[in-house]
Length: 291
Image (cartoon, rainbow, N blue to C red):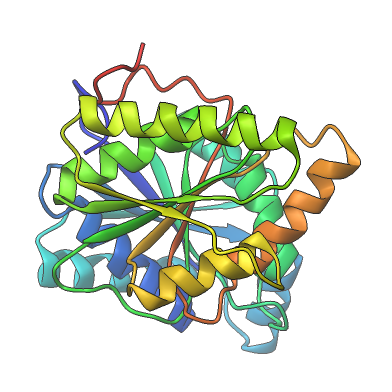
C-alpha cells in the first residue's frame, strides 16, 4: 500500500482481546485494495505466561488461537493473514520484529488509560515510540466499511513534522480522503511564524499531490490544543488523526508532548490515531515531493 515497489506487511499485536480484533479489522481494511499481508504477532511475556498457567494451557494453545484468528480473517476478508509468536517484551520485541520483517506499518489496539491489559495508556506510547514504522492506534470503535474518508492533520510549531504530512498524503491518496489541516493558535510571535511555515509546507505538499484539503484554524479558547483538535475531529466524524510520535524525547517539552499523545490516542471519540516517527526515511512512499 505505502511503498512504491513492494508488497507491504502490516503487523497487528494480538492479545486476543476485543481491541485486538478491531485492530485486525482496521489493518485488513487498509490492506484491502492492495496485495498487502496482515500478520498477527503475539508476545509471550510474564503476564501472558501467567495467564496460560492459570488456564492450565501451554504455548500450543496460543498458536492454535492465532491460527484460528488468521484463517477466519483471511476467509472473511480475502486478505492474506499470517501469524507469529515469540518470547520477549512488548516494548522491545515488537519493534525488533518489525525491523526483521521489514514491515511497513503496525495497527495496535489500546485498552484505554485505566485498562489492565498489555497495551494501556502510557504503555501504548512506549510501544509506539519504539516502533521504526508508523503505528495506527485504535480503540473499541470498529472500522468503517467505506475506509478512511476524513483525516485530521494537526500543525503546530514543531519543526520535525514533515513525515506526518507525507503519511497523511499517502493515506489520503490511497482512500481518496479529504485532509483537514488543523492549525494551532499561538500568541507567541516566534511560534506563530513557525506554525505558519509548517502550514504552508503541508498545503504545498497536499496541492502537489492533488489531495483535497480544508484549512482549519484553532479557535482559541480555554483548553489545550489537543482538546480542541479532538473536538474538531469528533465534530467532522474523522476516520483518522495523524500525529508525530516525538520519538526524539530530548527535553522536558518533549515529555509534555508525550502526555498529550497519551490523551490523543485515548480520545473519547475513539478516533484512530496514526503516530509517525519524525525521523523515519520516507523515500519509499508513493508521494510527490518525497526524496
